[in-house]
Image 1 (tube, rainbow, N blue to C red):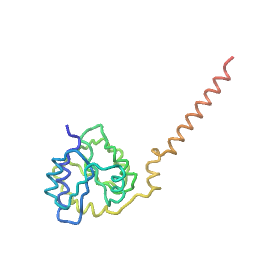
Image 2 (cartoon, helix red, strand yellow):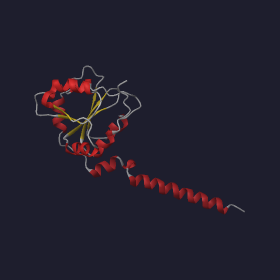
Image 3 (cartoon, rainbow, N blue to C red):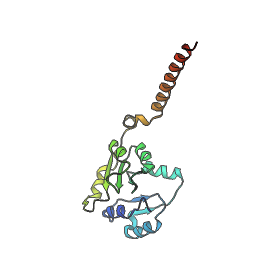
Image 4 (tube, rainbow, N blue to C red):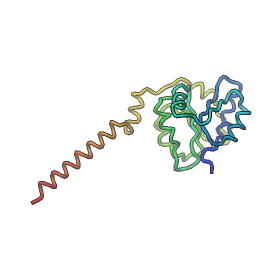
Length: 178
């Protein structure tokens, strides 16, 4: 079972054909589907395939808008979504389901535009959405506030509190021993 069949996403972004918008695809899998759409999109779709992490990282850093294809699975959130958020970039997120496993994370991030692929009547002006998001950023400070509970500082504070609570309990237990 494919958990990320890209056909519907490609069909939603077809309006970029003939514009100056280029979809740079750094991925692997579904090569037959990607090849089929490469013929349709021409110069508006550039496929790099599987690349080393540093190359992908540089591509994300240089992108105007990031594109995420979610999973068609009620339990799996794409691993790259939090990494995308960490860049503070706008994300155009294509999701297959209303009950997408990533909804709680998507709702927290201010520069995400969710496209529901199950909506057959979606009349989205994708070119307008991409242009409106292009170049927008969430600051590092803003990201730290949004995701404080995911920062090393927060985790360390939890560990320190747990350790302090444990020491307090341990000391009290030792004082009560006869």
